[in-house]
Image 1 (tube, rainbow, N blue to C red):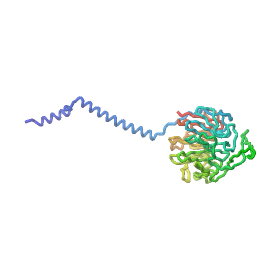
Image 2: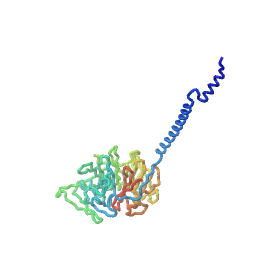
Image 3: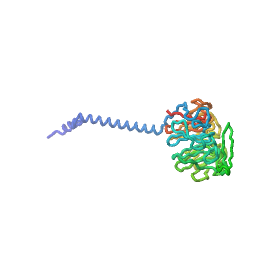
Image 4: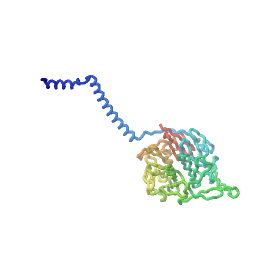
Length: 403
């Protein structure tokens, strides 16, 4: 009769050393399994950490503080195809062509990528201002939509003009006009000279904008913003201390922000000069210039919330203050860029931060070298987040490379 105790002990002894299988192969196999599980676990943990970091970390953004003059001649105004005269606004189209409102030349110039000579796409190329359909007087704000249609705030004519892509002439988009004899305006030696032409003898009729505060009027139109989903255009109606919204084929606008007089409380605006539509939050960022701050006004709300600058309307030079901010924009990550005009600088505010960093210009110091600005007015970012600034009083456009 077999001794089962001995057999069980032998089996236990063999199993303990893995003798019931290929001992050497099993040891290697078991080691491989343990190593693989460890690598999988470690790899999983590292992957989770990387994802968390990528989702929560604000990317490091830096720009070269030395600007490159890409358009215009520093300190020299003119009306040639390579010159500017107190420019104000700028915008990109889908091809990265740059459009500039050349205010005192009463025109909009288009500059193809890497080109320093432009072509006139709105107004007259010789600096003549006009109230007729093809003319402009002191254009300021500009946007180019996804179809390369152009909208220009024709400030001196109290209207917004619309240039469809490849069209030979524009149409009135917003503002009230009256038919009258053509008025041609020349800007010479710091003064405006008006030459009147009788429409009966010259067979020319113009649309003279009329300033006002009704729903179909504007008074000192500055910056523009575009909502691609609805085709709405938002207008910073500065003297009326409000933001108006207009839709195509509708001459009357809708009041969406301000309109309660000039003031600093959160239901009022003070001579706003720029507006930016933030589609993610369905709100407007407004350069509330007279109150020296940037505010956010959610569409449909009756008041704003402070984004940057002072809440009491005071100006300043610190990292939390602004002085006559004239433009604002966002990058795809939600960081805020502000033209702090009278501080001669561009301020960068990371998401959720109230302290700004100067990324172009020097606080309170104007100048015409490559590190200084002289009353900048507008800015834009290209698809690489390079920064472009209208250096107004230097009659040039400065580019700051991101690195």
